[in-house]
Image (cartoon, rainbow, N blue to C red; front, top):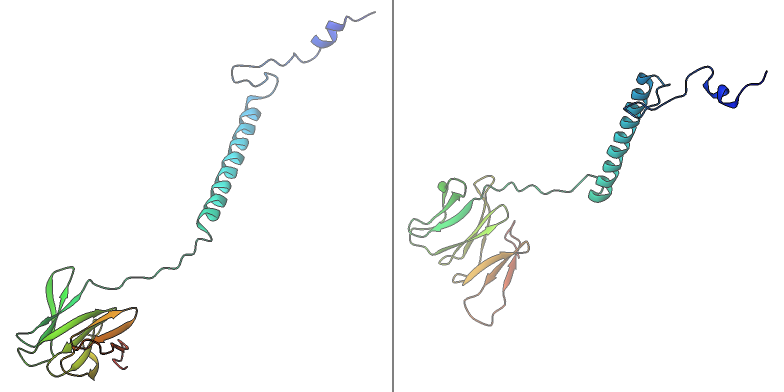
Length: 178
């Protein structure tokens, strides 16, 4: 008895034909959907891992150095009429604190420091440092009366003499020492 070659192909299980999902009809549908779900989960995990690697490479280690600005926007102003120095809160535009430093009518000049102010009384030569944190006088010094002015820059306090050609004096803004 001879068997036709076509008969070998048609014996036993029917040939697998794709259905509308593209899966062969010979495989259980649950198995195909389970494989697809696992493949999709693996691909999503790989995409998430790749995004994390790109993020770390783009931004570095994730740890950044930050300096917190703790200032309240306060500014110190001189009130020559009363001999007072007044702290104005920049957020509320209100006078928060007044410190008497000179006789009424004395010419005062203020310079803003990182954490306070320096005040110069041009009549007596009194140089005073006020802390914004404690709202108190933290240092005092005496300079030549009649100094033309002063400024703060790069962590230093500079006093300018009234006479042109004289050297500028540098002071430490924390202690007011030369």
